[in-house]
Length: 291
Image (tube, rainbow, N blue to C red; front, side):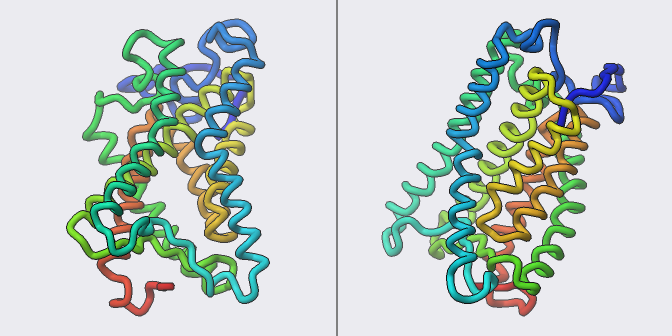
């Protein structure tokens, strides 16, 4: 997810970004060293660091520490497990539900922060529109997201199975929740939270800010992809590489469509299938690894 070659803005059909151009709002929105935001470069850099430190940057550091621990532990990586949705209060379902709701809700606070920050430079109510997460084209966003999810999700599963078999990845356990009435709704909510947080911060916000700082498109693409891969490193080398590739694809789609909406839809569908599919199939099919 990257920034600044010679940039010519084309008016594509339906207000979309034309092929090979940056997405709307990704590049500088005006003259001056801060891309028309009224903020200095130092302030923009500090803002980016703070947003990432409160969200996925912190997750990346945590993921690195987790991976070092797994890699230095006796035994192979595939003999260890990375659990994504775990119980926080085993044997106490109502308390567990409260913790699940708390975790999902608080994880979305950085999204509110990003929307607040973007609202300073766009017309009232236009922060979500600036990154393409408004309700302007829900049907098209969902259709594009479903197609992207089918392509990325299917190839991603095959890649995971291959790298795990080769010993480069931990066994990913998408869920380990108790069999209670709220299990599937919580898994769906968790998938939606992941999708909104990651695509808004790593694509919509980060690319816009790096463009305003004058990064080239290639550099910004690389930064976004590396960040996406880094906070998945706790899964192993496969999690790092696979998500970096996904990051490249998602940035290219964002620049083509000019909207984060399809990426959120795709990410949510991928995670819903992974979480709910594991809950329904674990231990019942031979090809699905379990801890």
